[in-house]
Image 1 (cartoon, helix red, strand yellow):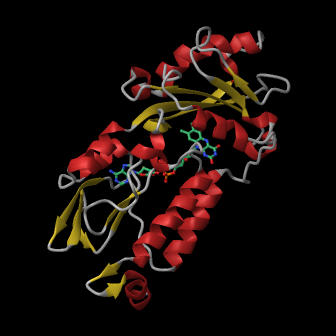
Image 2: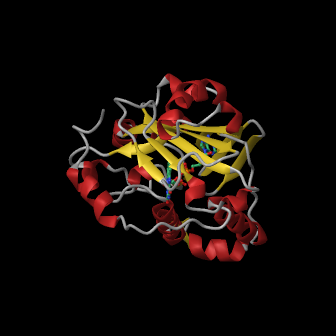
Image 3: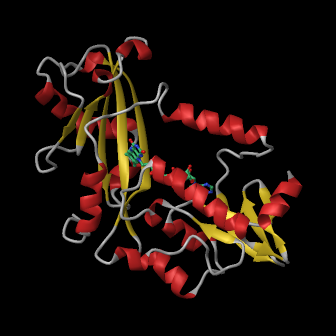
Amino acid sequence: ENYRDVAMTWFWSRMFKRTPSLIYPDGGFQTITDALVRATTAQGVTIHLSTPVQTLRQVEGSWEVASAQGTQRFDRVIATVSPGLMAKLVPQLAGNYLASLKALKSMGAVVMTVSLTRKLTERSYWLNLNKQDYPMLSLVEHTNMVDARHYGGDHLIYMGDYLPSDHPYLSYDAEQLFELYEPVLKTFNPAYERSWVRQKWIFSTTYAQPVPPLHYAKSIPPLKTPLPGLYFASMSQVYPWDRGTNYAVEMGRRVAKELLGETVNGVAMARQAAVTR
Ligand SMILES: Cc1cc2nc3c(=O)[nH]c(=O)nc-3n(C[C@H](O)[C@H](O)[C@H](O)COP(=O)(O)OP(=O)(O)OC[C@H]3O[C@@H](n4cnc5c(N)ncnc54)[C@H](O)[C@@H]3O)c2cc1C
C-alpha cells in the first residue's frame, strides 16, 4: 500500500546491495546476541531484560530513566526504540525534532514459525507471494537451506507479512494466525496434513520497516537530539540502504563515537568513560 510513496533511491539501493548469496550464522542471530552479551557484561554492563523504559526525563543535567523497576539516573542516554515511541517517552522533546519523529512512517510485521514432521516443499527456500491471492507475503522453508538435523529432525517453515502498524493481525495469537495461514499450505504440497505440525511460534512488532518517501534524506532526525546528553538511533535513520543488522551495528558505532566525542562540563566523555572503567 506504500508503493506510490517509496523513493526509488531506497528501492535502487535495496536491489543494488543484494547478492544471490545467503548466510545464516550457526544458531541464528541469537549466537551474535549471546556473544554481545558475554563481551559487554564482562566489561561491567548490566542488561535489564523485559524492563520497558516508561519515560526519559532530564533532571538537573542528568537523565532520569523510569521503568517498572523504579527510576535511575544516567549521564547520557542512547535510545534505540521506534520514532513513535521515542516521541512519547521523552515529554521534553519539542519543536522540529519532535515533528520530524512524528513524521516518520513505518510498517509492522508478523512472522509465524511452524515446525513440521515432514518437508513442505521439496527444494524451495524463499517464496514471495502475491498478497491478492495469499494471506501472507512470504513462505520460507528454512530447513531447505539449513539442514533439519540442526533442529532435531524437524522441518521449519516461516510465513511472514508486513502490515500497517495498527493492523489487527499484529495482535493475533499463534492459533488465530495459523487458522488464516494454514489453508494455503496445501497449495504448496497437496499432501500436507495438520498432523504434521509439531509446534508454532508467533513474533509480531508494530515497528519493523521504515517507509522512506521522496526527499527522505532531508527529514531524517540527527542521532544527537536537541536535548543535551540524549541520543536517538533507530532503523528509520538508516538511508538510503534498507535497514539490516549490519547497519544497526554501524549506527551503534557512530552514535557511541558521537557521544564519546562530546564534552560535558569541560571533560570529554571518552576520558570520563575511561576513568569510570
Ligand atoms: C521480518 C524481519 C526480517 C528481518 N531479517 C533480517 C535479516 O535477515 N538480516 C538482517 O540483517 N536484518 C534483518 N531484519 C532487520 C533487523 O532486524 C533490524 O535492522 C535490526 O534489528 C535493527 O536493530 P535496532 O537495534 O535498530 O532495533 P531493534 O532490533 O528493533 O531493537 C530495539 C530494541 O528496543 C527494545 N525496546 C522497545 N521498547 C522499549 C522500551 N520502552 N524500553 C526499552 N527497550 C525497548 C526492543 O525490545 C528491541 O530489543 C529483519 C527485520 C524484520 C522485521
